[in-house]
Image (cartoon, rainbow, N blue to C red):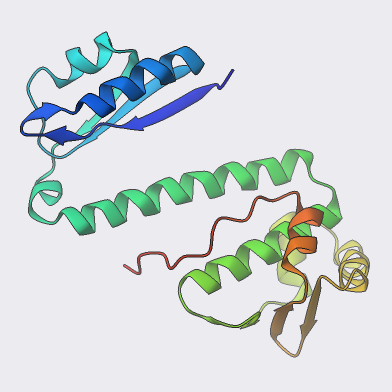
Length: 189
């Protein structure tokens, strides 16, 4: 059973769409369903969503959702991505080995660079030092150095002269225990 499921409530012709209500009925069967309602919606939206299984409704009727829907969607998308990233970072602290943590961090940074167009093929500029990585992950410099040597020996990546090359993306993701998001450009705001 899923713990928490968010469903974005769609408003069509001033009413919560039928598809949204059907999704809530199914989501409520799977776990705790919460609604996200962005932009202008009907006055009875919270009641309607609650009747269809929403345990909580997050609502914002800020004018940006009405006046600039594309920008509003991009901002919402970025916020959701950041929440997912935070979840992964917390997972790294508690459950990943040193090898998995470093693989995750490097792959995560590469994917972010790729999303905003800073990666050329499978290479990106990488101005960080081993000390930066050690400090970020709460590891000693010696342990970071040894772990990086093990990681590069796996042939999943190459790190040289302030650039980082992903040699085998799938192998690096497997080492990191990381489900890499699909390749797409993220909004650049």
